[in-house]
Length: 412
Image (cartoon, rainbow, N blue to C red; front, side, top):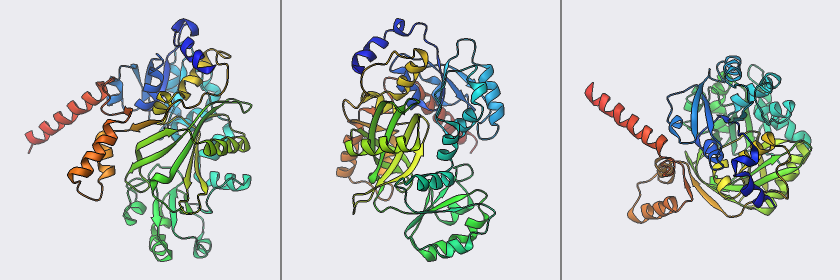
């Protein structure tokens, strides 16, 4: 069985000489690998970040930003690999695209698990994904692709599916953009209540420098956001899988996760497997769904073919997807037995401060509400910041903020 296989593979001798992991990502991914004794080199354009002080990080590889200079980043990355072909992990869209597009060169220096090249492009690009999903008959909400520079005015005039949501094709240039400011929004998307609001935003939509997707909004708050996570081998074999749901995000609407729960939702697991099979997917994926609280229907919002913050709570729940990939790449055939599935539910908090603002964004907490929130947070199985078993990053951040505050007072 898989459980005994994990126990055996925790012995370093079971894998022979363990190559390091090169991680283009955050502490959730580093700590998921660290749970199994895998040391990481952090690949980043910010070598002075707090993540470098994790006890699981052996070194930092400074590269160009993958969004600004992907070719330069790949050159530095390959040059730093050494001779033992370390295992490469990616967590963002830009680094995934850069690695995928240079996969032949990267694979000379690294062991890396990548989805098929065309599928990477279809899933990362939201406009391409909308078309791709509709062609396959996947349960995506109806949408309209607004391509920068084209005249989509007539299609916009005919749009009647409200409320709606405006999503950036990719996030570069999104946060702080004139469009987001005009909509008085702060999150990953813009909520549009009706045609009057869409008409008001139209000039900013036309001037926005990248493509956007207009999509029918699914009712319900962020607690209706569910996800399916899996590692699928080439050929379609599911090696490990789990499901989860969000409790809070910041901002509360279209925000980033601050509190999530890993669970084992059997109907969602079945749907996730079916979608992966229909897409012909292999690699690591997170399928994001939203449940309509009135009909109970599940709508597919995104398919992200990369590693993510869920892997740390997933590992504690019994499904360490990054480590499964690591073992498959280092010692193919070592993982035998059935599919790795959740052994227990796990609650994860990204950071205490950020989750506080997520919980009390619109009101001042009273004593009872604050106490209930504190119990939720401090009984969670994982609190990423501060992390008592890996305190270095939090202590560095605290020291850095204190020094900035002192310097600021000294110049005032």
